[in-house]
Image 1 (cartoon, rainbow, N blue to C red):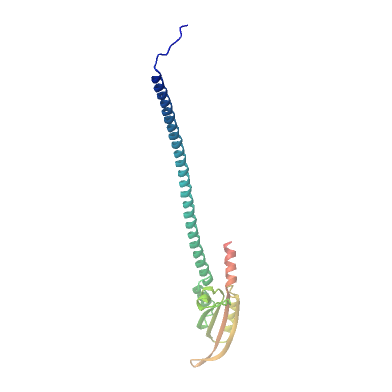
Image 2: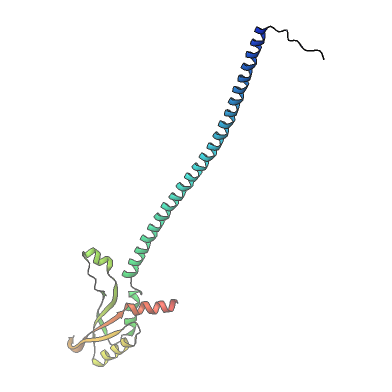
Length: 211
């Protein structure tokens, strides 16, 4: 085997060695930069995905808060409507006053002339601070129908009271008075009757019919 003899001068070999080292360091630097760029890009993409997820969760939370706020507003409106309806139910009478008047007129004998018909509600006792609170909280439990009229004699008055007592709408019928009075050149009987309507009973009857 023939030995290989390097005839390159020593100075050239040193320059070539330094150049080789420089190329190695340049290659290592480039590779390092490339790896750093890849890692940075990967981290940036991961951060963007996490940020997108966070933004999506924030939008969802905001949407849930808006829905909850809207739900609370709707519940408040519904509560207001229910209070108005309950107040209307407390103040409203469960029948038509005209029907009561028509029933009394149809019940009265032909010989009797009614001169007065007054309907007065009776509210439950309620201790309120102001008059406005009392009106808002008033809940009627009964109506008094006060009748006054003139009849030829007591038999007609008794017949009228008996007819009123047979009506289901009246809880009680009470004769207040019956006295002599002048009617033109003759005499007649003046009378007063009070009939009570229990609104609780009327409401219970209506509820039973509805069920």
